[in-house]
Length: 247
Length: 247
Image: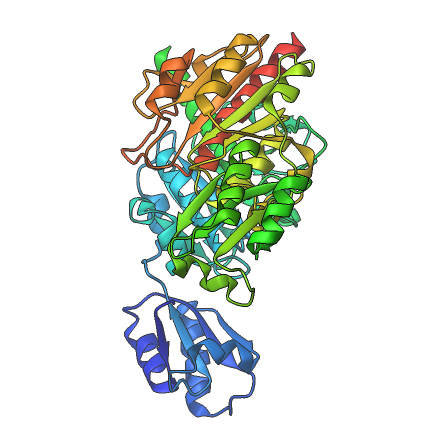
């Protein structure tokens, strides 16, 4: 079970103090709107914390708490700010951007792969993507402590920032013409964007990308698990780097 | 819940008829040994079906059945025989051998990856490896129907058979000297052996292998999920094949 804070007063206090990383605030649709709730919404907006109105059935798993119809899900890690990440020195560095990954096990496996492959950071959006929760932490087999996870409110803005800092952007798309191994990943900082298993990478991000690549399939069955797709691509970048360093 | 057959009579009948693929027979340690049970053990041996004595607590999930302390787990697919597989024509073909994979989700993801990468078959041992169950079927996202799964009683014998049929054998091991991409996978039939996440590939199989390779890690964190490790390797073989066909 995720770590949570419940009840209006405790959540208000947590938002004011700002010392605990909140993944999301869930508010029951049946909750009585009052000045306390308005204050929470206001504070959440200021701090860039997502809040979501959900059916009261969502709260059945928290029945043992006196939650008053409001729960804040606490992250087991502290997310990094993209600006702070970009201010560090980067050379032949890489980041992975996740656009709409919903499965906690997939995120955990992706984090492991990224750490093994020396990826410098993972960027996730604060909405429409799984956050780092207890299952992610467990599935990552400890990897979560070896890589910064960068949470952003807008992936479009994040990609723009990367491009402004001279990072190259590679998006994956099943209908791309180029194969992932046709890109030369040496001598540049680059980001790889992986999309949701069904919807793929958003059009707005594809437009911003410098390269759009696919993984060629040898059978007419195009349904690679996203963590396995990323692994194929990211270890190709490792192969190229190691080959290049031998020259 | 897996499909099961329960009770001595029904299991005896299933073993005699032999029309349903049995993954494993679980026998309660508390069961009374009688001529019927002996007949089941005898039939299971003849048919190469694994049976296992387990604590009666294992049966709590089957409490709604009148199982008399004995359950046969039925496979959702029919396994292929290795001899039948090898009798087919193979050219630049590949198989993946799984040595001690315990997680159903991993097996499902591996099956998806193998189908996408055009692998000709997957070999699993009848013991100390997850069998194809309902979770594997679900996680494979339909891929299970696009690739033969070959079940063998001995991986050592299976590798010997492959070698006798001129297949090359590549095993993965974290302490290998060579990297997986240093092998030339063109113009040969080859098998890739993936080991259990903790124990790795068995020594007896490493001894039989023509190549032992590792995935180089860019960070001192060597804990890639097995399906992600396989994905990196298998798509390198695809890359090489496609590059070669362009020549």
